[in-house]
Image (cartoon, rainbow over all chains, first blue to last red; front, side, top):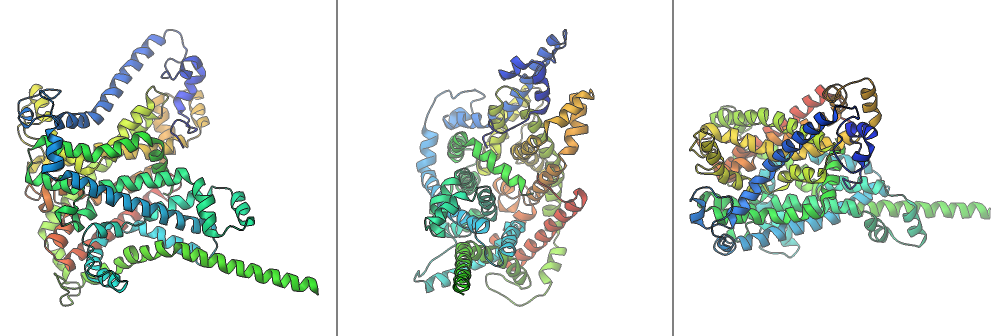
Length: 323
Length: 306
């Protein structure tokens, strides 16, 4: 599923590859069609195309570079007119963000929430996906459609009922289980309502369906039970799907704004996005710490993206296939 | 006879095996299913139930369709929240879809640094909206980078783009079109790669140029992808919340110019603690999104694999 390994058929290029095979093999943009006299014109056109392409790409990442640049500035530097790089490099933006404005705490909260949601999704989506893909039980198709149907229910419709359930009902229920005075208008609530998603369960099921049955049959002959088969045979084979689910879930939870904005009311539990929103309203023009906080919000996702780029592509492509 | 007994035993064994498999199956889906029933299926009915009551902090008297008639006469809802959401959707969807398609076609070619370009175009879709918006606020501030560049070009603009009533929403539209185009690009890229090469070979033999091939061959073949991308982007646009919340706060400032339907829902339910009214807004929004999806499905036909 790697972007580079995909049997991708760059159409126009594939045709032209026949014409200028040597160059195309080196990865050179499919230039001239081999017709004498056209080559020079084609080269100029290619050069122009690359200039345009790099300019567009620059538009996509200049804002990020500019924020990184500002995060290393002093406050005075941000109002002293334009300069590409900081006049005086300083880490005070990061220091202020992490300590004075509690973004150290918020980063930890984001990591706890996103981590818990990711682990729970990996487990429940793969367990459920395995059952829907492999085990036979009456009502399986109907239940599966019901689960998929939840994709049609927007978060906004769930806002009020879930808020009231978290306030009025669930603390009473968990008190019966021995957890007294629990509150869910906080981090626990944010985690609880995102324990698993239908999209993830669907993705895992589809992946399990593509795994040949031979290995499970072998495990069965060895006397392995269903859970053991799931854990020892299926999970190790589902690496790419688990990676896609884990990465996309973590990214979504890390960036999440809607549920945290509703449920996180105590400052000590804020996530980075909520911290940024709050900071925005309170100290609008303190740019260096705000940009430092933004870099903190983006950096982990950027690292994960660079390391696991192919799984992002695979995951999004898979969600596109379900139509 | 011995054979018959053995067969019956085997059948019973199989029966037990089937029962065991079914029980294990129910066991494995029990937690996810309980979760979906409790936090997705049930809240649909509960939202409707709440919307029929005058429900502030505590459940009040039954008011029937009262919250819905109140919503029908709510001028802030119609002249600001609904209007802004529709304007936003009408502009952001064509922009992000067209940009996403153009980027997909480009990075589908055998160009140098293809991986780099794909990553660069996709990355803004991945970054937290809170970070994106604060960076945009900084760049579009009154003395920000964007105004500095404009001033150098001789066009003098000295106001914060998000701070003015006339420019706040258009700025959000431009910002979101930029950040979401990467996701649209990936959807289109997956679809482009599933188009067989021989189609293009045939077009090339017929002497069709790149431009003509795109409009006559590629574009029509992408029909299932168009449907999927349109549905996803329209639903996303109708649910816009993050950008408005981050820029104007719960009140949709300046002067309601960034108020959207979802922000209004949040504002009424969480800030005003009018749960009955908030639930009614949620139900109306859900029905609207559902209708739009059905209409799109009728217009574009049954979606196939994108």
